[in-house]
Image 1: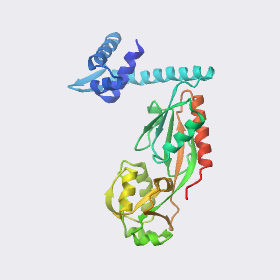
Image 2: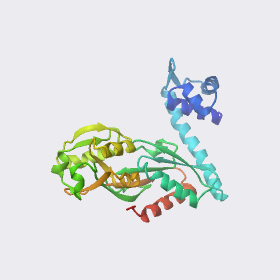
Image 3: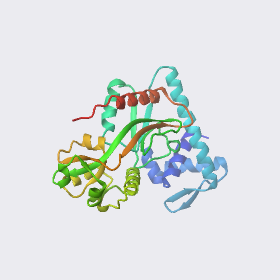
Image 4: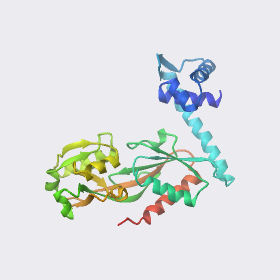
Length: 294
């Protein structure tokens, strides 16, 4: 059984489409199809249900997929451990992020200054994922409480406030009450967003059912809408600060302390590479020494 068979098989299983998988490997569809057929012939069983262009795993395929993912991870871990043992960090560190899109470039730039030889790849998700279901080494994500889970660490506590336009009468205040917030129209994240889930928890505790002006999951667009006085928005403090939008005021919420917590997580099984350990230590120090801009 060839490793290339398994690599093609896994990607087809995840994309449910041979053409899309072939495009990712920069090969023609027939090449991927031939590898899948060779794998099925070697095993003596079909691995997929086929319906036109759609191809989905059957029960045999699901069994192979589970073991193939484990096998390829073990091979990748062995390569990293051998490189670490040889003191050569010549492999790629894959970091998934479900938070902090504004601050990520600053963190990566700072890390590359210190460790130019470590290759990084950033994969962004809209919400929390199970890192064990991915090929990623590390995951940056937010939560509404400090993490106590194994293989994870809380690295920053971030305040959430109300962002309002300079044209909004609330902009003349330092803080804002729940009653005042209830009278505003909100620019909100979609239900796909973990940040929406977190802020809805706070709003429900305050008894606020906000009127929705617009829905967006794109932070720069949200900032533009707030600056244009199209509505108010709950924002993490770092998102507001690093947007540097001078037409927006960030108000502290007086009735409740709103926070979210930034965490880093690594896989529960497998090898934690030296590069991953270096990144965990670096980002922890980065947040401990973070000086918020004026």
